[in-house]
Image (cartoon, rainbow, N blue to C red; front, side, top):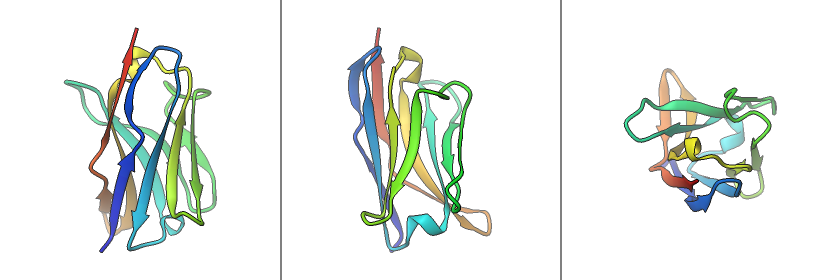
Length: 116
């Protein structure tokens, strides 16, 4: 059974760091496009970072230079390193895999709260 499980969220002060993890099971994450998304309170879900199968990465302008997406093939796990966090980064964070055929596999999400 294909599954994504996020962890690593929490509450931090502005300027702090967190590392989110997304453990994949039932499939090999590196064979698919993987992304991190977030949904701030009362707002639409937005893309944060993406990792292509060839290793190319992409970031939303709002997180460039502060967030880094990376994976560990041995652990079949995707990460999002978040530095210099700002209150505007407060959101529920989700990882997702593009399984093809317009089907996306989503994790349950992990909450990140950044206080001023």
